[in-house]
Image 1: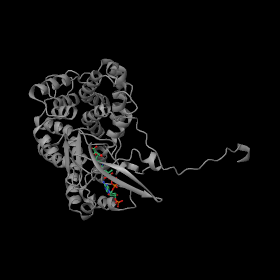
Image 2 (image 1 turned 60 degrees about the vertical axis):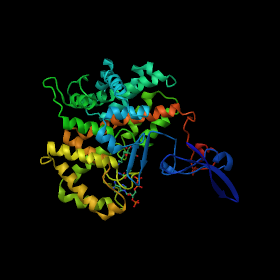
Image 3 (image 1 turned 135 degrees about the horizontal axis):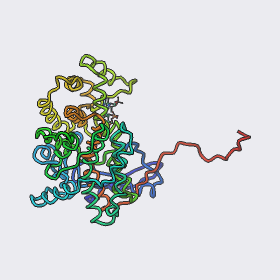
Image 4 (image 1 turned 180 degrees about the horizontal axis):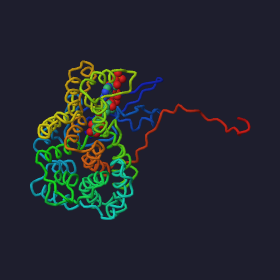
Length: 431
Ligand code: SDX
């Protein structure tokens, strides 16, 4: 952080405390409260961390008011338009865009780590066929520490690098095999002559009886989905990975924790929840009923795929994703898919509704990614695994940054205790 002489004064009960402030290269200043409890004997209180910076970072910056998302300073719309997922992975991991030689070497390393240890297939077969693919991903990724013990020593830079490459390379295979297992089809192995997105699509949709020709529009849309979900500051799952890593846990266990957190419908599970909502709405004529429910304070229903904790203007990823959605829907058509027809009308009506404009509720990245994945033929249960696959590079980049941070210490929040004060045990005969 950039040192400043600015301080904040905190006064209460006739006392005053000077707290140092730090200025970022972009975004709001922070008040450093690390010594507050020691000096003033009080905690700060911020459930959900709406006003709390948990770390400093140089990886991703979001300006929620401007709808700006930068990865190492590069705007997401430029990266989505001109770059591709593995190049963005390199940027997130190492801090700068690669030279042609650096990119070729990185892509070669990732390509040659896409296979899983053959015995790991047993993990998939231990699940019921109807297991949610996220349950399989949490289990298999956590188990990777048992199959790749040579890359679990977080203090060894070589081990950290190998674990990073293994996770980025193997997530598409794990996600694709979780899908194949759920539909009773044989696993399809990765191929080294295909790019990252095409390899994933082929592992999902090829069968031994018939190979799968990857349509370039679909592989481009898939690669764009990967890019747009790659990293996003200290969101819930990234914060989970950081907190798990702060105890010194191995990288595979920490990424498994991130996958588990992402599964929730308020976070990465929103794209699946969005399509399930579109299915519940069913037909275009029922949209007003659901929009009214979303506005009703007494109704817990929310429009899945709308709103965001940080973006209070628009989600720049959704803008780019909408372009891909239009391309894919043009290619594949929506005439025979009522969910996609409902999505197009819901988007229009919600964007024109003053309530949503006033509440700054707009379609977020999950609204459009769900539409694209539905059109591509993925079941909704595969939406969040694809988000997890994409976000692995963000989790890993933040994990590496945290381990290299000299300030790194175990995360241990305090609380506002509202429970019983000390009282003596009462024998059962006297209760
Ligand atoms: C992701 O953090 C990240 O960066 C996440 C993510 C990433 O890349 O990692 O961007 C990925 O998780 C995107 C968000 C996906 N989630 C959804 O689409 C689920 C639906 N969205 C909502 O659950 C909600 O918008 C959140 C959780 C995303 C944000 O919630 P906040 O910031 O805590 O907002 P809030 O709950 O305080 O809501 C503010 C107001 C409330 O009304 P009031 O109490 O002020 O009257 O807006 C309303 C809410 O009721 N509101 C909605 C709504 N979202 C918020 N009303 C209807 N439908 C919605 N979707």
